[in-house]
Image (tube, rainbow, N blue to C red; front, side):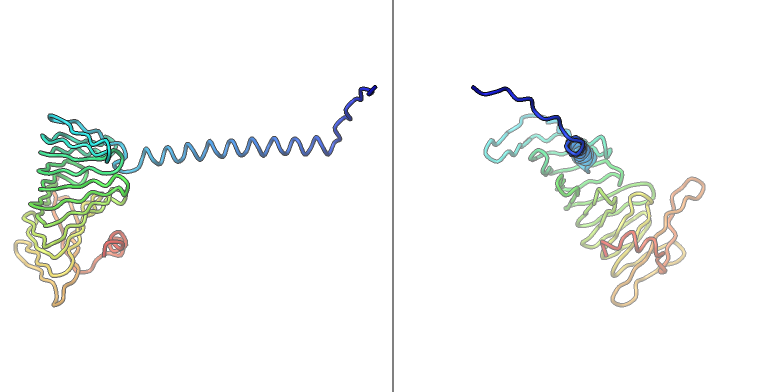
Length: 237
């Protein structure tokens, strides 16, 4: 016959080890919750992460590829970025990309019209080409291509750029969407009414600083580019 034995009382060291184990477990849970909240918040704030697509007519969904086609076009909006797009034809895969044809787009960068436009939701970028034109206060630009980085809010125009407001041409143009400042790159010609500024042989840089005069947008042109503007565009030069 076995005698029932009383379990020994935990020692002070044992109680301390148990308390440390409980604290470590609680810390791991708190860390996991914090990381989950941080990642969720980052995803929610990512550029183009929350697009809303409204079809103008029929929708065709390919179950194998996950691609949806809107043959009659529709609208795409992102309330967080304040972007609103209307297109004649749209193709998209949820949380990956939007491809549109016959596009009119309104955003923080201005009003863009183009033959084709692509929004990369993974990379947070927007590209457009064909019959490309951008208009915003004090600036009207035509170019072959547009690349917009939503995270940095820098727009790059390429393929030979021409502007009518103000009047200039350049191989490439960078626009700081936040400040409105512009940088002409490569071969350029800026016509400022009473004067003109032409790039040196081989190309160069010309800064156009946005200034307000009596409530009207104007641009001051200068070949000496401010260090802060160079730093702002460094990743794109």
